[in-house]
Length: 140
Image (cartoon, rainbow, N blue to C red; front, side):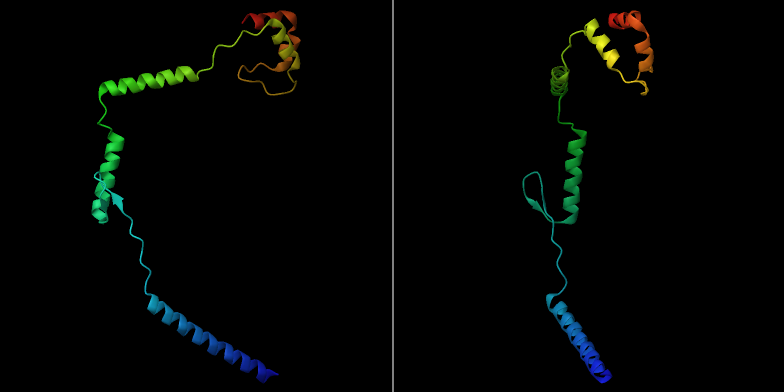
């Protein structure tokens, strides 16, 4: 039994050696893998493959992008006006003033024992303030 196990183990090591030799042979024939060369285009659309040319083109592109010397003052003013117009359009329209009844119902619906909001006035004080406090809040 032990001899059989030794025989199997010996075959396994021989097979591993053969396999590693085959792997080495395949690796030699394949050679090293070539890295993919990245290209970029210049302003005229020509491909740039040289490393220094690509770096110069990147520096040129980002210089134009970030410095933006091509815009005239009138173009910048027009762009500023367009942005202001977009902001005004995006602002919500004036809402109607809430009625006194709506304010009273909101105050009654407030939950007790909760953290106060920005005004730092607890809901309990608003509820216990009575009609006078509710009217003063409605007048605000």
